[in-house]
Image 1 (cartoon, rainbow, N blue to C red):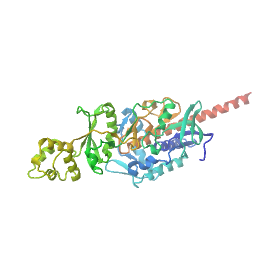
Image 2: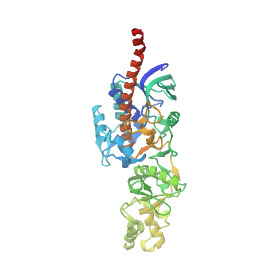
Image 3: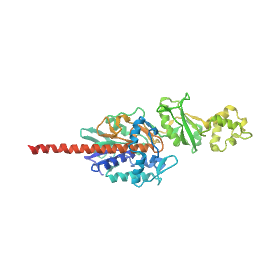
Image 4: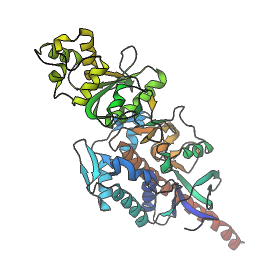
Length: 444
């Protein structure tokens, strides 16, 4: 499409990412006679999809429920997820030639291990449904009118009966998800949560931290969050359960699936208490007391020899240095306080992050438009008629493993179908209203 000057459409979808393409497709499928247009201002369409899951795109998870998310009340999230469950996601992608495989973690990836397969399927589905995709085309303004909406874009104004707003949040801004959608939402009467933070993001550690010297080391671990008092951090009124998974030491701090998962909880807890700590159990299931007793029972062996096989030697040597323990010395020669410090570093390592890597490295956004400003049955705004909202711009963020994508599919499906029904009714009403003057003239 070379230009949009004076263009009109039944439904315009702002943002052609995962939620946007899905919403547009289902809108066009629901009412094939409608004109559905999706606009996106990113340089590369579907950039966030292409980098997801290390370039493989973790489409969804085999088991999804409201407990896998933060932000909105669980009951509100559950109501949306139930409308388009995982089984429907699998069926949809299979329809467009994408077979999904389940890995041991429960994550579902395309059998091709290529994110491009997923993006091509979404674009193919949209094209098959008759969706008109305008790209690149940045939306610069949006205004509600009596008969619909007028959007100012780089290619001129576009008028629409209904708008589906799904521009993403603020994560990976180079993908086009730069927070502009929040300004659009405010212009249409919505509020944004006080906190809008990066989620599923690596954590940084202070300069000189011993774990930063272990860049490249990845280990299975169990993660807890603790307040300075020692109390566990609570989520939805219950203590946060240990988060298990790989932890990657980097030159800036910590990353890996378990860290990305705990980051969204750490950010919320840190806002309330800057002293909240991350407890890394490098030897899951083994307490510091049990390891200390194990060392005491060792006779005639060095510390490193006694710990051999439990963790990589590079890691053990760094831990010994941090505890001021000579790893080549016999266990019985090590002072009790230093030996116990070493066991704590291995079994319950307390880490006080200095921050996060920010939105440029985050996989999703925590915060956004409160879900209570949306009708969960239709995803239509309670503030502006004929405005539908879905995807990451809402205050819902899922844990790592395909949960954010499942939210995109479910909320996009509901918004697309409901917007189509609404636009169809508005079009019919407009036709009736247009014909009435002619009927009066004929009767006169």
